Length: 79
Image 1 (cartoon, rainbow, N blue to C red):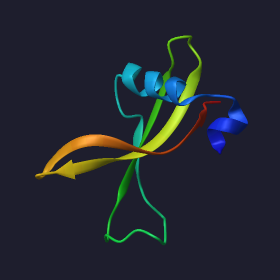
Image 2: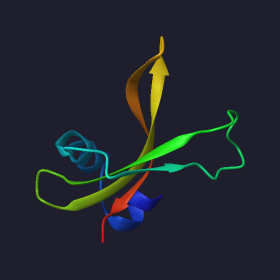
Image 3: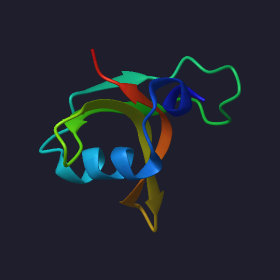
Image 4: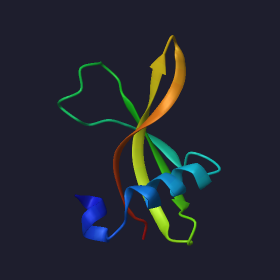
């Protein structure tokens, strides 16, 4: 919904994540729906290939004890 409101596409978000050089910051989830005790969300601020700044929030998902992929929670245009 945030992406639609900001007029950005899934491709814009994917390009932004792939262009990122680092995780901007990590926060502890405040969601009452999480099943695990502690869950951390990672903030990425980067641009798509056209230079549009995009803010995304997601979590690293572990498989066999290793961070395997980034699960996108939300994204919008960065201010």
